Image (cartoon, rainbow, N blue to C red):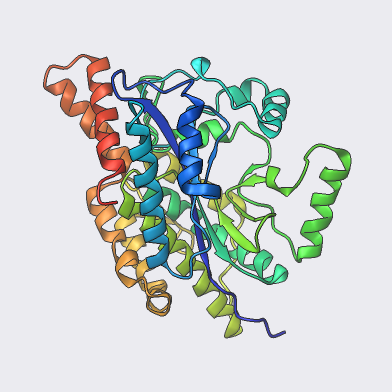
Length: 378
C-alpha cells in the first residue's frame, strides 16, 4: 500500500537542571519570577518540569536540522541569560553530580501532584533530565511500523549521549545512571511491538478505561508515538551537555527514520530482532557508553563502538544528504574520539582529585565545567 511521504519535521525537547552558582547545588526552590521571565520571553517554548529545580524547553516545529539548531541554541542561551540574573545557571546533564533528591520539591501542578501521589518514592527520586526528539510522521500506521524497526538503533543513540555518571556524589560506574532511576517507573524501557495502529490503540484504551493511565503520554517508553503531535518521539537519550552533540543526536535520529522509510518505500525493511537482544545493547550503552562496544547480532560478537558508528554513518549517509545534515551526522566521529559528557565529567573529577582537591571540591569542578559547556557555542 502506498504511503504519503512523511514531513520529517523535527522538534527537540531538553530538560535542564538549575543550579546555584555559588554553592553549585540545585536550586530546590527558585523564585517564581525566574520562570515567569522565561515564559515572557519564550512563550510556550518553556515550561516547568516535575521538580522545581528543572526547566524544560522545546523548539517549535522545525523543517530542518539547521532550523532546529538555531531554535535550540536560542532556548539554551535565553534560559542561561535569565537564570544568570538570579545567580543561577542551567546545566545540560541528566543527573546532578552531588545533589540529594530528598531535598527537592515537585512543582505544584495537577499532573505532577497526581504523579507524585501515584508513584510515591519512585517519583521523588526522579532527579533526572533527558532529551527528546520528535520526527513528523503523519500516517498512524507508518508511525507504528517505523517505531517497531527503530528500536534497534536506540542503544546507539544512548551511547552517543550519556551524561549521568554521578549520583549523590559518587561515580556510579555507569555512563547513564539516569536510566537506572527512570526504569523504576512503570511503562518504561523498550516499546511493545504492534502490528497496526489499531492494535496499539486497543491496548492504550484498556489502560485508560481502567484508570491506570490518564492518556498515552504516561507510556514512558524509549520511543513512542506522541499523543500530542503526529510524530515519533525518541526518549532514550541523556541530555547532551555539548550543544553540538545534541544537534548530532537529533540529526542521527531523523536520518534513521528517513532511512527506514526509504527501505519501506523500496519494499524492504530493517530486520526485526528480539527485545532481549536490543535490551542487552541498551544495558551496554547504559553501563559503558562508547567504551566497550555493542553486540553485533549477525556476528554474535561485541564490536567496538567506533566500528559500529562508522557503519551507522554509512547506513544513513544518503538520508543525511537528502535532509541537509551530512556534517552533523559526520560529527559522530568527534563524539567517539572525544567522548560524551559522562567522559568529561569523570575526567574533570579525576583531574581535580589528582591535583589535590577534596571530593566535594572535585564535584564542584564538575558542576563548573557543566555550566560552561552547556552554553558553549550557542
